Image (cartoon, rainbow over all chains, first blue to last red; front, top):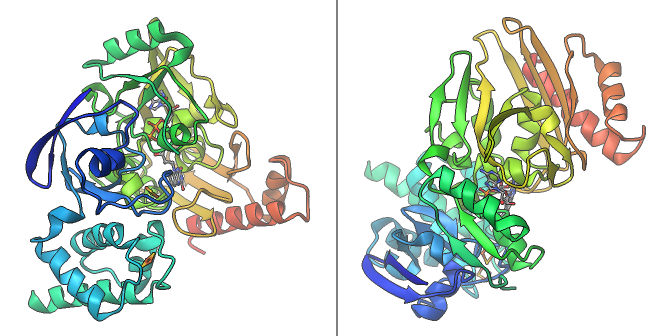
Length: 156
Length: 267
Ligand SMILES: Cc1cc2nc3c(=O)[nH]c(=O)nc-3n(C[C@H](O)[C@H](O)[C@H](O)COP(=O)(O)OP(=O)(O)OC[C@H]3O[C@@H](n4cnc5c(N)ncnc54)[C@H](O)[C@@H]3O)c2cc1C
Ligand code: FES
Ligand code: FES
């Protein structure tokens, strides 16, 4: 089937089978390998991307179900101001080691910052329950997100 | 793993979807958010010949006032309920429960109808709709039916729905300003399926006092007349739900019910 959608702001077309997940369409048809695939059943969060602005699991979303959608992956967040602040905070707080979870983690973190500007540590931890990190122990990730939330508060 | 091969159709109307489903027979399956079916396909636990995508059907996205109830379309996402983007006739119970379902990225796509049709005994809507005595509205080739949520689930992953029927939505009674509710979900980690769910709703104006022993590996257990539900009666309800006294399962279901009731009673 021919799939047409917008990926990172650019209209694209791809030939995919109905069974192709959005994650595989991104990685193997569009060569956007920033989106990682871990569990392939919705649990680990490595594959989290934005579909029409909202975080979603690309491993359990069929690519054909995204026809006409606006998809944004980690590659498309280079210029995004919140993602930029988060990248700096992740570096400063040692919020990554191997980096496998990081693309999904940043998409989720950006959603937390934008949707829950008043979130404190317990809420940030609750919201992060769907993104597994096998390296960091989460402390740095939580601090990085809290740092960006605080920066945005003081900036008004 | 990767999903098996299947064909895919995206009908433009509910009637067209019902026709495709009826014509497709055993090999046809609906897909809404794909948040239960996606993992099942990737594990190859199901190998349908045809998937019929109903996620964006406008008929399943409607929310309407039915007077003493609110009809929530089957395509309503968990996140829309969590955010209060659709009317919550329970004065906050639906929204509080929605927030505990899976993770935000799953809630953005997973739907009310998909969750009910899938009928995981531990699923939050399956249990909550039974507690609320909601009605599930289903449409098939021969018309529309309204089914009591408490009797809708027959057992694990088994419902009263016919193979050619589509859930169009759920009709949830409006609770009055005097209503009190409580709900408690035990899980190891936020976002996981429940190990136990307790629920309690009391609305003197509707004459409604119901309690729930949920996530019991089977259809939810509801106490329909829970007006005088004290601790011994709760203990009893959990035993009648199928758990032997003194077991871990009995204890967590009892604790969930007790906490839900305490929350409702403001204790
Ligand atoms: C990691 C993870 C954690 C989760 N945790 C929880 C949790 O804590 N609590 C919880 O309750 N759920 C949980 N879920 C399940 C989630 O809530 C699903 O979104 C939901 O069960 C299915 O809704 P869906 O729209 O995605 O349905 P789909 O996956 O598209 O479909 C599920 C089934 O329902 C059928 N179907 C779909 N729509 C209809 C309809 N309108 N009429 C008739 N049949 C229909 C399909 O044919 C299929 O058999 C979790 C899921 C994941 C991936
Ligand atoms: S790969 Fe999608 S959630 Fe794990
Ligand atoms: S940095 Fe390695 S999994 Fe998170």
